[in-house]
Length: 81
Image (cartoon, rainbow, N blue to C red; front, side, top):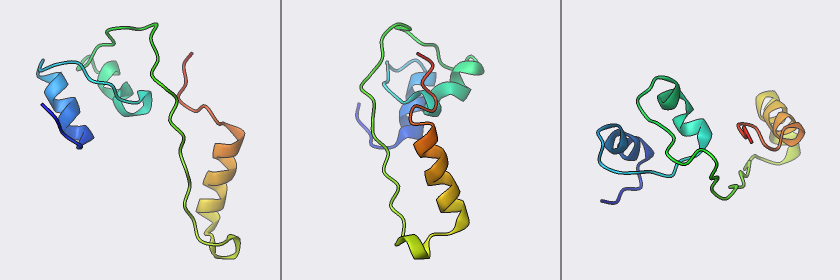
């Protein structure tokens, strides 16, 4: 099966229809709730970069500025390795 919808993919896995590869931040609540289990706990996928696309520096909201500053200080948020 194939989908580009992460929610559908997780639902399939929750119903026992296969293994999935998703980011930790995406599946952590499902793992904590016991709806999904980590099959290969020592294995990690590739690190995916995240890009913040924001207006020019003068047009950024204070929230966007705070988020970008936080992301720069914590480049591996969610990495439990």
